[in-house]
Length: 206
Ligand code: GRF
Image (cartoon, rainbow, N blue to C red; front, side):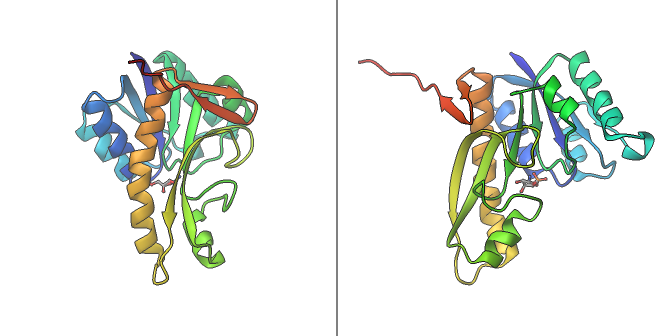
């Protein structure tokens, strides 16, 4: 069973979905800890409630981004973490971090990448008037919302959608997509070739 860690900054609804699926035994992994850069993130409450260790790091205590990231890497290595899950973690990772955990960091984005990168994926899709948006789970590289895509789910946009109504449907898809992608990773079913991620599904022989 591999150790995973979840990095958060906010409400943690994705974290909750992951906790639930790990708890049901659907994802063969242990959540070693949940780390936040915001001490009042509700996600930390969710972790505590599930009996998971929590760590809070305040960026004010570190001069450079890399110093902050070095502290995280130290914690990850201490616990033999093999997969880092960004779930609403609102900080860009330094290239040092990405190098240390190359192809072992994943993120979820609330749009169909490469469209609507950045922190306003839902608002930007609505403003652009696209008819279909969705969610993307991808590996993290040195560039924002750019790494190889593991899976995507689509969400139709309705004429009367507001940011709130669309967010609700996006979240529903995220809470299915993220555990699904994590399960594929921990079961060793993902193979990265350049920009492409191949999913090795088992062939069922009769
Ligand atoms: C999600 O919408 C995710 O796509 C984005 O940040 C949000 C986190 O939400 N990266 P939550 O904290 O998991 O509720």
